[in-house]
Length: 121
Image (cartoon, rainbow, N blue to C red; front, side, top):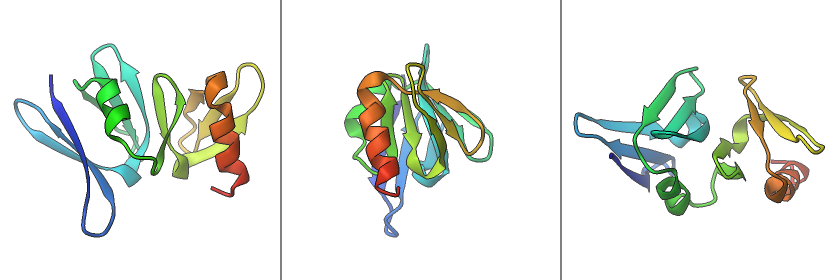
């Protein structure tokens, strides 16, 4: 299993540093569209279109993150609020991201999404 550390750079940008046996991966939070829990860890979906899979427990990401750009919208998804394009309300509510990804929004998180959208982002 890899390890995850979230920190701030001098310019204030948040970075995600993932250390594996073979390498250290550094992801800028501003480049993450969303991340999701997978069977083997976390899948980071990047603005470049790349998907980066790391063997890190999703709960460690949830516990380390501060409420910055990544917001919880589902028990298995965090989205970067900068990349929210549209929120479809209703019983099967979901977000459409600027890259056309569709992310489910669980009922308990709909209020967070609505508050964010009404506050002007």
